[in-house]
Length: 354
View 1 (cartoon, rainbow, N blue to C red):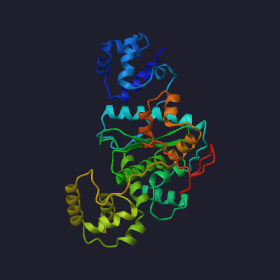
View 2: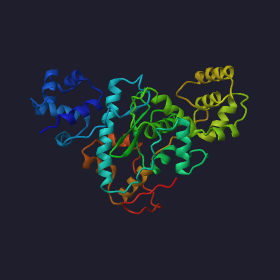
View 3: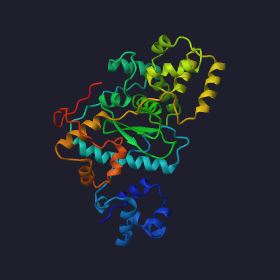
View 4: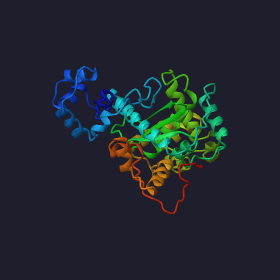
């Protein structure tokens, strides 16, 4: 028997309305509605069309209940401009990530999280407190994804073809999750990771609906990636845009983010800040001067390499979970488990060191 919940998930992943979905299956919308209500079964011809357009095997639709992220507890970056279709597709990706994460947790021991709850702090205080808690002082964050993973955050990627979806985060069974859209610049993605970290430590109990939640997460991300004392020590004066472009390399942030921080701290005047923004806008939002390399997951690389040694490829995982391989690849930063035969990893025990 087909599970309507799983068919709905695939519809959301395809970005289809019920009417568009019905048309793709060669049936009418009322048939889809009756099926989702549990009062009607799909014909085998409709199922065959479903398999053809989705790439999902029939066994996926015959499996049991699927766990979705709690939409009320999910923090979405760029929420204002995010369409319902993109939002639902991203949440459906989260449900697939749960399937994968649960499968992995049966085979590997991943780090427990070490995220204190700092909701009684200001964003800047929280960033300082977390850096102190993690013992990283004021030094720049070398790799934001690895930093998150080393402290027990489950980090997945999203390959959603929209500029309006940056990232989202939430808690599930006392585990923190972050999803990052890989379509963004590496600098943008690093800031998104820090932004979502801010939500995790500041808004776990208050939820993302908190009126100032997005502003607070932005302020946290700025302070976490660019500690004020370090920024002022390295850039006490700014004589032109080139100073910002050279300086941003230390903190691996966008030129715009660094300019904003320095302006807020009074290092850059209002007049100069407006001028820098105009110059940066001419370059476009999709291109960063002297851009950095994209970050990827160390945890997933280690896991997939370890599985590869046991003869388990991402194709085998996809078959076990009954999920198309491309969906898993989209969640795992496109890592194809290229083996590093010189790296020796203890089976079923992963530990990250930043």
